Length: 383
Image (cartoon, rainbow, N blue to C red; front, top):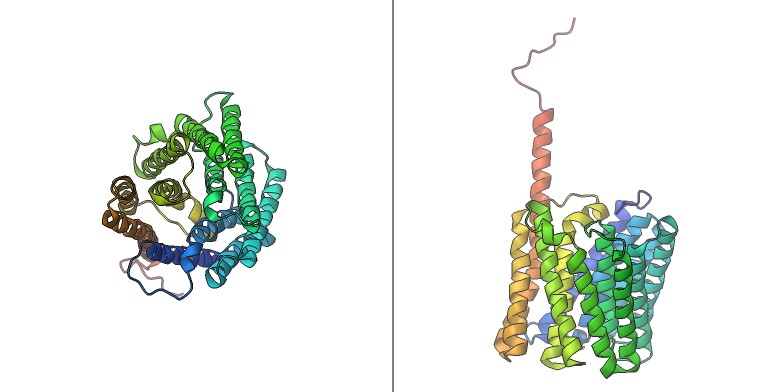
């Protein structure tokens, strides 16, 4: 991604901070859903958990990154509207005001993609456009009265299509054959058709949607160079580990939808949601942060082995949540694994900050060493 030189960093940081606040709010509402004894407001703010995490946090990050890529100040309106919409949903509860703001964010993001398409059209950008369209479709369905649980396939299309497109754009996916783009478009079309089918025929549509999700996952697993770079070192290996683990969780979600059909609540609903939005989406955020964040904030986030700690905690705790909690029905294990999920996300933020601060101090120390006068050097005497 090319950082937009016309978009000052001072304009980006408040939006990024607002997205971070959405993350904190979403994690707090997750604690309420897990029935953890934390102070709770009178209003049922936990109802906004899904929209706040998917659009207030993930959507804001994606829209901000695209705005920076475009380099136009008006493009910052997209992430600004997404955080505003999430904030309204938390403060006022589900209602048209928050949904309209989120819809406006989707429309503005589509406008950003239109401007980017004029610069460089391609399959990768088309996938991201499909993701933004899915965001728009979700808000339409909410305004029409659909509950969040019935719009989950469109939420999944938003994150999966966008991330798959960005994988292509970041050149980590090797198109080894001429037919690879056509297969990708076929898989993406199946995913979109499945999501549309769930709206008009939920029972049959979910099976089709699951098959489309498996098709996209299979394409990524076959063509992603992570299968090779996982044997490398440093950042490439870290990224590959997170990618392959994320693809495994996405495949599990696809299998559950394809084989078991729709689930609007209960353990299987919890399993497919968190396999997709924690196991896949959060894993993608963890491993792409050292690549994308420096372009957004113009500050380095170097790779460090410490970043493996929250990544491992994320996947191990999710395995416990789904395996012991959702599958085996052990409620205490489900609850504590959910708390560990939250700790993994917060732990990643803490590790990333620690690595960035340590790197900054090292650079300043090296700069001071290089610029400090040498006490043994001869002193020039004025003539």
